[in-house]
Image (cartoon, rainbow, N blue to C red; front, side, top):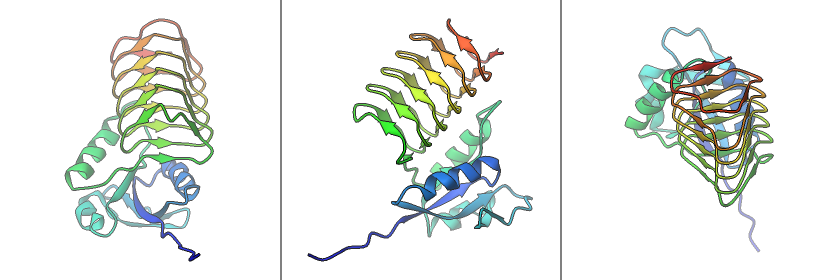
Length: 209
């Protein structure tokens, strides 16, 4: 019986900051993909990150996508999702492909759904009937329980616990170790600081700290 070697799909990372290191670590753990290089903002002095070269700037996206259209937004998100949203929309308009990247150490229910461009980091659990939007970060050891709905462009940080039936609208940030009680709603662009225990709905554009 012949043995076939499957070539990994090259993927470009957009953003050369600290979160880029985590993204490289994630991609390195997935056999189907390999980091082709990094795109950074104009004026950046970054030459490489963890041995992967910075190939160009945001202004050169279109030409760089010609050789490697698969893309992951590797800019982090804390106070605002706007940079990630802008880069996602620009890359999308230029024909980028946004795979869902899932750590082999994550546990994702076959009855859940995760949309394009979302990165699922190590030891994340996504339970049955959970739905995750586009361009999200599900960071290491986050728990997304059954029937939770998370909008696009959200960052669920390390060790955050999103309990059953929680609704998180677009553009939200949930800090490390935060606990969201079952069934609550978090309005768009809200920020929940690290370690908070949230028992009631959070209005849009507010900070819980």
